[in-house]
Amino acid sequence: MPVHSTQIGLSTGGGGDVIDITGEVQAAVQCASVEEGLATVFVCGSTAALTTMEFEPGGVADLRALLDRVVPAEGDYEHNRLNSDSNSHAHQRASLIGPSEQVPVLEGRLALGTWQQLVLIDFDDRPRERTVVVQLVS
Image (tube, rainbow, N blue to C red):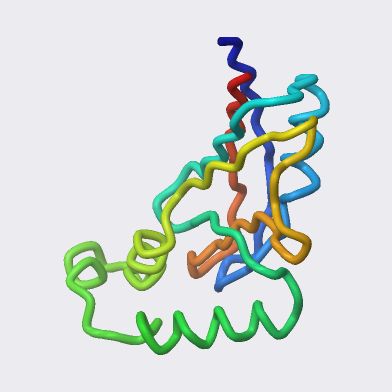
């Protein structure tokens, strides 16, 4: 079973920045010439996450509003007290969404739905340089 690995570097704005990475992951599939297999996509870092969604302004706004309700940026967080920090909400949001997604590869294409994109969400409270690892098993 061959394994192909690549990394994607991204600059983010933090603060809930949502970035569509579907094209970059599909390019990795094509570069590796994988026709049938599995793509695992993983973001390095504890304040960012990966998921799938319909990447359009309304969906992005709704996701941000949901996370603001579930894990507000302003809150009584132990992490912030212990570390003189202000990004505990970012860690908690990233934990809820998760750092990775797996997508089947069929006929050389990511098996995503018509309105389904892979997105990186950076929850940190400042701009960051992010690394996304793509591993393809064929």
